Structures are given as C-alpha cells and as structure tokens.
Image (cartoon, one colour):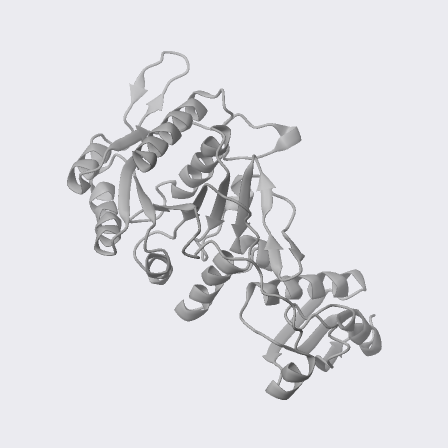
Length: 351
C-alpha cells in the first residue's frame, strides 16, 4: 500500500496552476490520512484559487497518480492558501490573451435551448456544431448542461483536455473544439454544486480555455430556465439562440418559455428546430408522426422566427473503429438535414 511520504512526493511534484510553483515548494500538502485496509487515501491540499477549472484539472491529475501508485480510492479536500503564502510565491507571469467575452471578440455565440429535458437538445447541439464545421467554420462547443453533461459520450470523446500554462486546451473532435463538465468529473459522479459555483465554472469555460480564433461557439444549455441558463443570459448579452422542441403541442408550449426568456434578456432567437418530427420506414418510405404534428410550426409562429428544420427519429450508422454514437455522417440522410439547417442558421445570423 502507498505510504504517506510517497503521497507527499507525488502531490508535491505537481504545480499550482496560478503560482507556477510545485505544491511541494509551497507546502501545499497539509494533511495525509491512509486507511490501509481499504486502500483509501485522504489528503487536504492548499492551493492559490479554489472553485476553478484548474482545480478540477489538478484534482484529476492527483487522483490518477495516486491510483497508479496503489490507492484504490482517493478523497481530496482543497483549501485556499493564506494571503501571505500567495504573496510570497506570486508569479509575475503576463496575463493570458483576451477572452472570448472581450469587446473585440469576433466569435458569435449560439445557445441551444429547450423548455424541458428529453427533446434531444444535446444531439442537436453536437450535430449542428459538426455541420457548421463541415461548412468550413471554426467552431467550439461548450457542454453547459452541467448537471446532465453528455456531449463527450455522444461524440465518442475518450481523451481529456490538457493544460498549457494557465489555459485549458479543448478536445478537438470532428473539427469542433469541445469543453464539458464531463471532462472534470471522475467516473460519471453526480454534480451537486449550487448556482454560484456553477456560474464560476461557466465563467472559467469562457475565460480560461484556449479556444483560438472561433467563428461560432455553441452552448448546449440545460433544459428550462434555471441558474445556468440565467448565468449564460447575463454573461452573453449578444448571444443568438435556437430553441429545440418535439412536435407535441405541450412540448412546444413549454419550449416557448425558453424562447420568452431569451427575448426578455435581449437574446435574438434565430429559429426553431423540431426534433423527433417523424419516423420514416426504410422499407416503405412511409412517415409515421409518433409524437404528433405541428409543434414546431406553432412554436415558430409564437416566437415569430423561422422553423429551421425537422429532424426525424433515426439512429446514426455506428462505426466500431471511430465510435461516436450520436453523430450522423455527412452523407447520412439526417446528416444532410443538419447541413441544410446549418446553412439556414448561417443565413439568419450573417444576413
């Protein structure tokens, strides 16, 4: 079983992301507790800033290294270093470049929203981002559904972002730069943070990720009009918005609330996408309207925006060698529909 001195050496070799000193140099390891019978290691660590994306990256690295060394489970508790320690080791490194939220940013933000869960909003976000990239645009995607993150699994992403200096480098998949809460949570653990912490995490996604020169940054919002959606609306005053609904009239009625919220916060709703619009038989070509008809039209009329497209109920063709369970190939019938929708989105935004 791993011993205390080894724990201290492993953690001490890692670097505080803001002071740019090793955790050993700054005396960050405050407490170590080892339960040999359960092979469990508990550590209390002092760092310069808590509640940041960097803390989550550091946490992930510590857990991975301690498990490699023989621990079966790891418990970490982070505290902030004293002002005196931070002042002693403060690094005068230059500030990172301007964020996406700076006034001179040329990136267009597009939030994908829905009034309720289960309408396929994340699937739409993923495939719309990929369709825009196929049209030659530089695209980023934030999985802002912090409680129900699913984008990495949908896109078949198996690797994690890396840290370069003070910046997190997003994962590139199908030409889309991706960042998700799912990258920073171990073993699909539930997220039990409250509103203020969620807002901090979103802020980190904007300021502390090295997105590069993006044309469009899509945000897969949580369903409804809760804390995260409100934070996005306050952070991004010039954001465009697309509302996703199913054909069912009730779903469209609920989705209208998300659209109304966007309009009240001066977000421009560029259109509506109706998902699960119909099922088309491969044998006969006949369409069955499993969830009813008319919801998308009703919602677009109420919000006075165009209906950008209707997505059928259909499964992508899976490729065992390059597995991405929710991504439609460019030549797939649904992939072609997403490309048409992407062209309409560009037309609405760039006109």
